Length: 198
Image 1 (cartoon, rainbow, N blue to C red):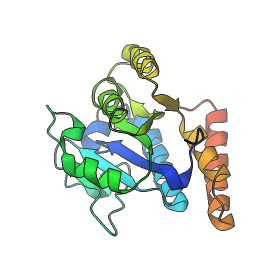
Image 2 (image 1 turned 135 degrees about the vertical axis):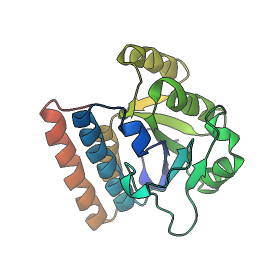
Image 3 (image 1 turned 45 degrees about the horizontal axis):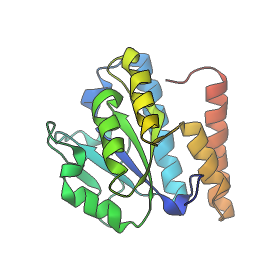
């Protein structure tokens, strides 16, 4: 099992990256978060990492989603009932298992309920699970640390977008793809250096 994020072993699960969630945020934070999700999407495209979406309600505003679904060869957007676990959608679980990529990176809305539950449930399903902390927003800032403590207790790795970009870049053999990932990593490094993380 690789400790670092390796593109060939990675896949993403974005939970509710939809307008109705981002509208609950302060406008400035929502804009920053949208830029961060866009950067994650570009990096996933360069690293050839599939990204799956789990949404609790059908949302027809796909052009306003925080990330763009990559559904070129097969559907990667799956619905789950808001009062049921994400993994209760067995089609989603089957699709992600068929990728044969054990490193799962989860992010989205909301850290203090669905995102934490998705990550905790993914471990016994066979995934090496990580939560992208700066792309997982909590309803309450006071509950963030409690979620982090619980995730740590069960061996779920917390990672920042900066870490993920670097590790994908470092583990990409194709020069052109690595170069594009390096640009995104440097942009993120500059942004984080300005103290602008969510």
